[in-house]
Amino acid sequence: MANPQEPHVRSIDIDLAFDSERLTGGRYAELVKTLLDTKRYSTTNQAFKFQTSVDLDDGDSPILVDVDFLKPPGRWPKEASNTVDGFRPLDATACATAFLDPKTVDVNGLNTTGAQNTVRVRVTNLEGFLIGSYRSPRPGSVIRRPRRHLPDR
Image (cartoon, rainbow, N blue to C red; front, side):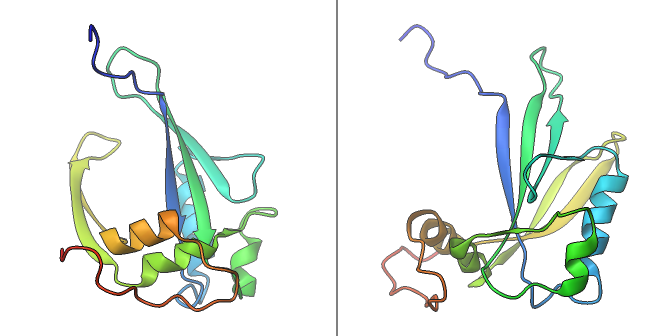
């Protein structure tokens, strides 16, 4: 093979799963407002998606980043819906698996001003990711932890 590396498609999708039971007291509205106030994100023609671009300083065009706001189907706090005209998370049945057994991860890097920064995020474990990616339960069904068919972490 002359060129074994595939070129990057210059886009990436980030899924943010929101737990509506924890988003009380205007937390969701505050998060959306904070992201928009940075002026780095813009709304799109889809009511659940923000978009931004990231220049990797690699001499190529910036990477387009779609940020999808998702939630398990069901109830959604009333105050959370009034942040941006019509903006609210998309119901995604499989996203409930993200809350089965999340892990806390520290991500180190440079912030937008070039200063070193550490951000602590909660991410789904491998089991939740695989289930969410390949098994989407029927709406209204209860998601149960699968039998131990995956190797221990």
